[in-house]
Length: 386
Ligand SMILES: Cc1cc2nc3c(=O)[nH]c(=O)nc-3n(C[C@H](O)[C@H](O)[C@H](O)COP(=O)(O)O)c2cc1C
Image (cartoon, rainbow, N blue to C red; front, side, top):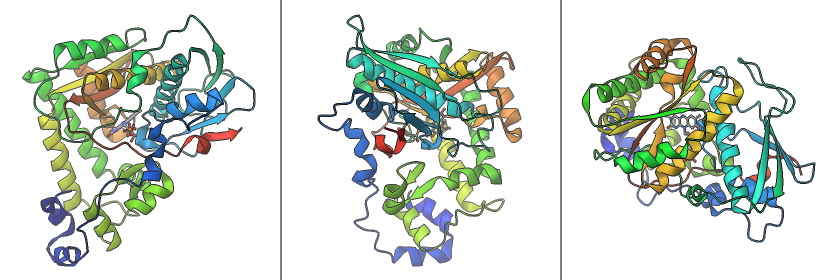
C-alpha cells in the first residue's frame, strides 16, 4: 500500500499518528513458518500418501481456506472430505468454488503421484454426489495409490512449487500466442471450453468493465466484504497463527490495525474512502490487464465443478511454465443476488447461456513481477485419521 492510498484510508488527522510508528525496517515478507510448506515434503518422508499430500495442499483454494480433510486410516488410500467449517456461504452460496478447490487439490495430488510412478485412482463421491445447493459430511473422493510402470510423469508437476496467484499490476504486453496455446492444450483432456480474450478491442473493454463492476459490488455489499474480513490475517502474528485466509503484511495496514483504525468487525460505511481507494486500485490493475482467460462447462453438477477445478490448476501451472501470471476474478461468477447483473453479463459475453452453461473460472492473465507464496497450514493440519 503506498502513501497516497494510506492517506485515503486514514484521513488527514490520522497520518501524523501513523507516521510516528516505527515502520522503517518492517518487512511485508510472510513469517517463514507460514510458508514452510512450499519447501515440499519433509526430507526422507516414507509414507507416499503424505508425500503426495505435501504437494496437494499447495493447490489454489478460494480465499485460501484450505478446506481439505484427509483420512489415512486405510493403507494405500486417501479419503478426502470437505471441512464444512471452511465454507464461504455469502460469496459462494452453493459451494461451487469450494468444489473447484477440491478439484485443484486432486489435480496436484495426481501430478505428484505420477511423479512417483504411481497411479492415483480417484473415485469421486464414493458415497454419492452432493446436491446442487449444499455439501455434507460424505467424502468428496476416495484415492487409491498403486505402483504402475505405465504411468508417465507430467511436466506440469515441475511448476507446483512455483505457482502463485498474482494480484499485482500486470505488464501491458500481451501474452504470446504460443503461451496461450500451451495453456489451452493443458486442459484439452477436461470437459471444459477454455478461451482467452486479448488484443485490445471492444471484447477486452467489456471484460474490464464487468470485472470492475463486480469487484465494486463485492466490496460495497456489507455481508460479502465481511466474509472476506473474517479471513483477513493482518501482520506476522495472525499470519503465522492461522496460515490460511487472505494475508496482508504491508507495514501501513499493520499500523492502521494496531492503531484500531481498521476495524474488521464492521462493514465500511457507504462512500468509505478506503473502499473507494481499493476500487480505484483494482480498476487500475484491470485497465492494464492485457488478457483474460476463462473456463466454461456444460452443466454444473459436482463432478463438473471438481473437473473444472482440475482444469484450472493445470491451466495456472501451464501459465507458470510460460512465465505468465494469473489471478481469478470470481466476483461476477458468484451466485448471490447483487451479482445477478454481472453474472448475466459475463455469461453473455462468453456465449455461455445459463443455466445450461456455467462460467466456472474467469481470470486475468499477464506478465507480472514475482510475488511470495501464500501461507499453508501443512499436511498434519489436514489429517483427521493417520
Ligand atoms: C475457485 C477459486 C476461486 C478463486 N477466486 C479468486 C478471486 O476471485 N480473486 C483472487 O484474487 N483469487 C482467487 N482465487 C485464488 C485464491 O485466493 C488463492 O488460490 C489462495 O489465496 C492461495 O494462494 P495461491 O494460489 O498463491 O497459493 C481463487 C481460487 C480458486 C481455486
